[in-house]
Image 1: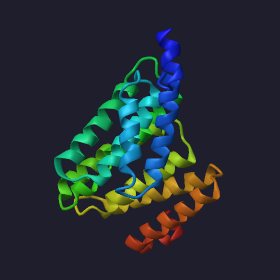
Image 2 (image 1 turned 120 degrees about the vertical axis):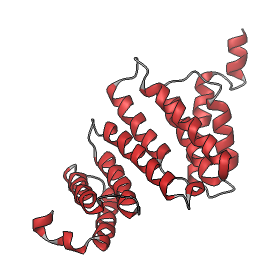
Image 3 (image 1 turned 60 degrees about the vertical axis):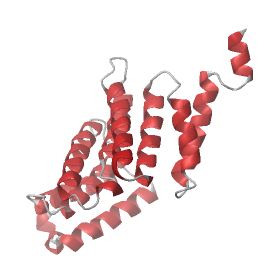
Length: 213
C-alpha cells in the first residue's frame, strides 16, 4: 500500500529518475543562474535513488554543471562528489563494458578544469592529465564522440604552459580527428572536428604538411 501511495504521488524510483533526467537536460541547456533550480532538483532526486550506471551518469553531470557556476571550495567540493559517484560505478562489478566506457567518458568531463581553477596553471594541468587518463579508458569502446572528446582534452593540454611536448600531443590530436571522420559521424561531430583541426593548426601550422600527419 505504501508503495502504491508513493507511486501515486510520483515519488517511486522510476518517476524520480524520469524527473531527474528531464531536470538534468533542462539544467544543461540553460545559462546561469537559471540552470541552478533544475540542477538542484535533479541532484536532490538522484541522491535519493540507489546508485546505478544511469543515476551515476546523471548525478555526475548535474554536479559538474553546478560546479561550473560556483567558485572556490564549493565548486571543488561538487567536482569531488561528481568524481566519487562516477568512480564508484566504474569499479562496481555489475557494470557492463559499455556502461563502464560511458562512465569513464563522464569521469573525464568531471575532471576537466573548472572556471574556479583559472589562474592556477598547475592545478588545471593536473586536472587535464586526469581527464586524459579517464578518456583513454573510455576509448576501449571507440566511437566518434569518444575520439572527439579526447581531441578536445588534448587541445587544452597543448595550450597549457606546463605541457612538456605540445607538438607531439597535437599530432596525436589530429590522429583522433581522423578517427572521428572514419567513424562516419554526424555532421555536427565533423564540424566540431574541423574546428578543432583549425585550432591545433593555429598552434602548429607546420602540421598541415601531409608528412607530419
